[in-house]
Length: 324
Image (cartoon, rainbow, N blue to C red):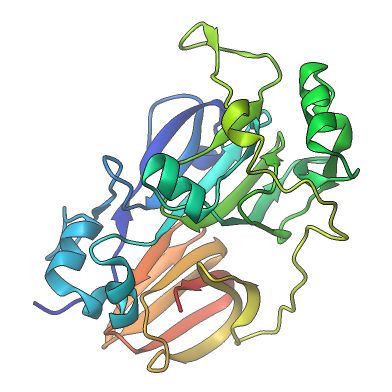
């Protein structure tokens, strides 16, 4: 069977802080309320997305990798991760703020949870006036001072608050305390992991459960990076019809492409799958003479064996993601 570019059926996740933008802005199809996350491409156990169409419709990533191995993910990726897909792709809509949280490293996550760690990045797609992200600290504090701020519910006073606009990009390594603020919708690229340590949640009560959400401060305190950094936002160029570096980390590489007209792509030197995430406008992909289209809020996985493509648009912005 020949491989082809794959769309997956998203999984929609209720969140206490979720809104309606995934439906009203990105045209996601669901009936529930307070949907905060659309999991676009996921190999997380018990939360696998399924191929949406074509001869492979209904297959999970694990099944695809087990069948096609390096042809779908790249030989290097297959050698390193086996049947596990290494990345999780999401869209997130925060009507109210997310909890203040932190993610453990690969080593700690493996020891405590038999999981990958959770290095991630955010690309802001839409932001209300005065919307902000919370990333890292503005003030150097010790672990003891941190615990005191938690006890006094003053942790927000020492954290870095940054007003954001569409296009703003942040890399969130493990150990960096963070939160998405109210009124932000973004694309998130992360390691395949669902391990989050929640450290502060505004003392709010979940309407579904009638209780406050669990905090994980005993687990979090020794994984946090307490250092203050000069900048938390990623700087990048946005030249047309080229892959502009957005975030390159040991866990994934993400570029941004502003397409104007036709753009041939050759991935013969990249031993990896390619994921396209359309964050603005719409574009077409010509693969072996067959056209595929993506509009804002849609995601496509191109198997590693498909090296040559042609992109066409009159102004789309696309995130290009791979492992190398």
